[in-house]
Length: 194
Image 1 (cartoon, helix red, strand yellow):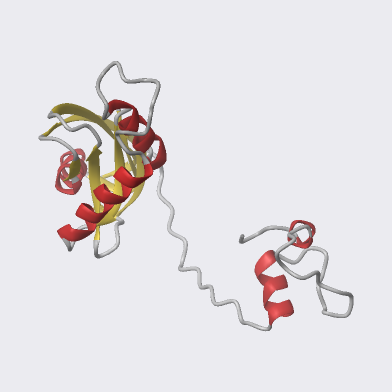
Image 2: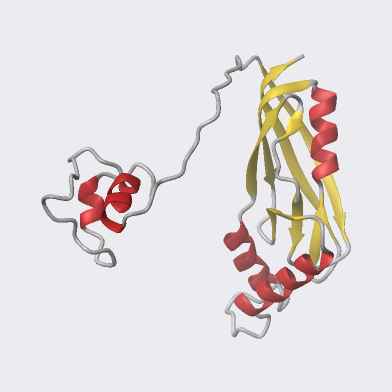
């Protein structure tokens, strides 16, 4: 909601209408309006801005062999690609060339999280969902739905040669088919190298 003009805030039926006398200016952002209307302070802090020239576009392909439905961590593979590219500052794009698997950034500390995520995705798109498309098996259409929900591309900041992930985050290929597959992931770094 950051940066929405007051006119968009006022059109929201879920929030009460600000009235004259609240000190709301026409150019106020949503956070300013919410802070004034509901009486809370907006706590944001922007770090110093660092800039780097885009000098390099480096691309590689990663093949991931899956053994069936589940999450396969590829964080180390992406980090190795950045190391081989001598990447320093920029962004890495991770793109999956398939429609029945997906890419996610998810917790890498407790494997139970990934088990529960597989269960949740099965509930969202069950194999016995009465799908019309079943030419490739009962798990194919649910795999397409799961891929659509998660997406097939990620971009991650690269800072001082390292992935800008949080402490407990990892990059995963999510395989949504029951049988083993060979999945192709395109890695592309855009930015400044050593």
